[in-house]
Length: 549
Image (tube, rainbow, N blue to C red; front, side):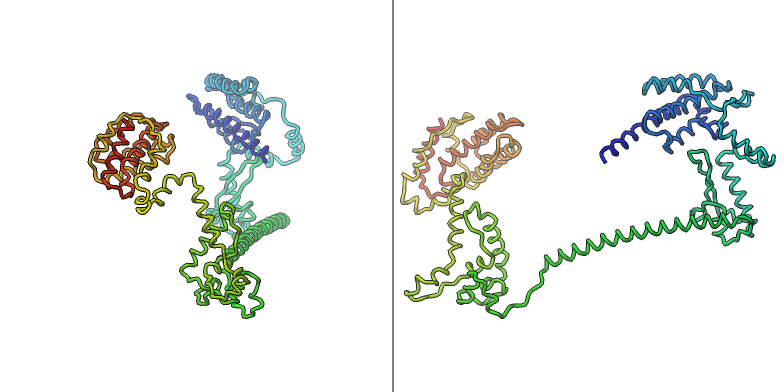
């Protein structure tokens, strides 16, 4: 398949190149005599229009032979005028030199072939003698027809020199005569038109078309279409032959139509089966409830809970007793999450019925003697295991330092630990140097509404999670903070930091923003929800300003 596609592409490329050369020759100055010849020939090409027709029909095949035939025909167009020595001979010589140059760019041998190609029939009005060489087939044809009447010879000679339009006109006259001989009228031929087609071998075929564009291969078919009987002698055999051929063609066309219809039906059948399967999967048939207890007892925990009465019997859906209908979507969501990430959570997959039974489990007061028996083993521990697994996963999160302390810190813990808890970070912290020079004491001393401070700090917190090459979001976050804050020192600091912003990397801007947010976090613990006294806040501001100086 790849070779065929490559050959087709190469053939199309060569055809475009031939068309380009023909277009150049057609657009040469004063090329009208060579575009359409006034002396057409049935045996060879004498004008550029005929060359274009052969090119459209695919006469010039792909390869060396096709290019040689194309070059020969192009040379004949101009050499015919040169040999004939007419009034266009000098113009033909000038055009031939340019055409030779066009073909020499493709291959020098093709240029020589264009210049040396001669027409096979050099007959002209000026009295140039015919060439003695003629085909054997033509000689044999003339020899076989020596006994024929002069009328027949004159008829053949008159047909040979006709153009296509003249042939179409003559075919319409013959059609009118044929319809009249079949018992019709000559005016009936006005409802038809004729089209003459030239075959590659030189033979001409006449095809007739009705007003409705119905095609007829012969005059006999037209007469049969008009319900006219052909009573001429010898016409019966031809009509039978044509009828056989037409019937065979009709059978083949009917077979092709039936095959296309069958293919359509098979495709529709496949689509219908697929749609039925999708419908059955989306809307499963509801089975009737089973009354047989032995069939319901499959050994699962849900069956045991049903048998012992530990599950609330009231339910909106029979498949999950004890679970309300509005909780069913959440049940599916949680169960799917735990089963999908069972390896990450170190949990074993559980059936949906067992998970629903664990959620709807209701403990029953049992005697002390049987507390270590079967009833204790039936208590579902899957929920406890899942909760422990989720807590373990949260604790292992490397980014938990950014949010875990704000959740765990409560007013009670702060009151118990006192100043040691507030200064715990200061003892372990090693303050980094500031990226941009700033008067930290003046920045912290400037008064600003706490809501506004919280807003621009949250806007700058987004920079912490961005990569240095993600410059767009970093720039927008800093601009939002500049627009929100009313602290002039913060605005000047962020504007200085933005001077070092680069379209490809914003690492320095990110470092400056993160440094500022960390210093504000240390100096203003009350912004993050801590209940701290004004004296403690003043001490924290003094410590942060001293370290940043």
